[in-house]
Length: 203
Image 1 (cartoon, rainbow, N blue to C red):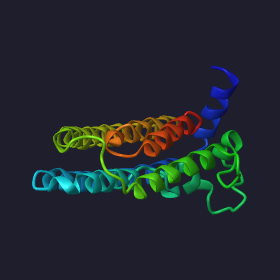
Image 2 (cartoon, rainbow, N blue to C red; image 1 turned 180 degrees about the horizontal axis):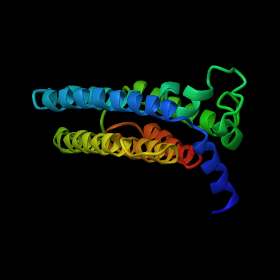
Image 3 (cartoon, rainbow, N blue to C red; image 1 turned 90 degrees about the vertical axis):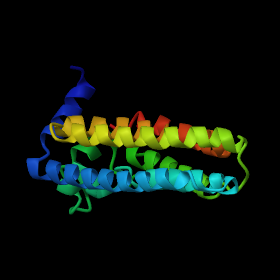
Image 4 (tube, rainbow, N blue to C red; image 1 turned 135 degrees about the horizontal axis):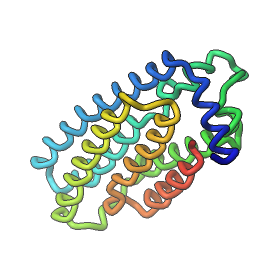
C-alpha cells in the first residue's frame, strides 16, 4: 500500500457506521426514485412523435444527472464533518482539499458536472441522427441506466466507506457515459469528457 492509499484508507476508517449508513440510505433512495423515472421514460418513448425525440433525450439526460450522488447528503464525510464550517477532522478535505476550495477535487468535478447539465439544458438544436436511429439509441441508454442503478443499489449493502467512495465515482462515470450524446450537440460530448476527467480525482 503506497502513501496515498494509506491516506485514503485512514480517512475512510474514521467515518462512523452511522454516517456511512446515512449516506447509503440517501443514495439508495435516489436510485429508487431514478428507476421510477426511467420506467416512465421507457413507457412514454413508444408513443412520442419524432419531433419530440431531441427534447426527450435532453429530459432523460438531465433526469439521470439529477439523481446522481453529488449532494452532501450522499457523502459520509459531509454527513460526519459538514456541521463544522471549517470541516475540522474531515479526511476527504485532508486528502482532496476542502470542497469549497477553488482547486479541490470536488469543486473541479462539480463545476464540470454543472457545465455538462447547462450544455444539455441549452442544447436546443436538432438531432444529427434520424428518428429511427434515435429510437434505437434511447431505449438502450434507458435500460442500461436502470441496470447500472440496480448494480449500485446491490453493492451498497456490504460497502465500506472506502468501497462507497470508489463505487460513487465509478457509478457516476458509468451513468454519464449513458447520456445519448449522439443525439445532442458536440458541446455535450466535450463537457461529458471533462466530467469523466474530473472523476479520476474524485476519490
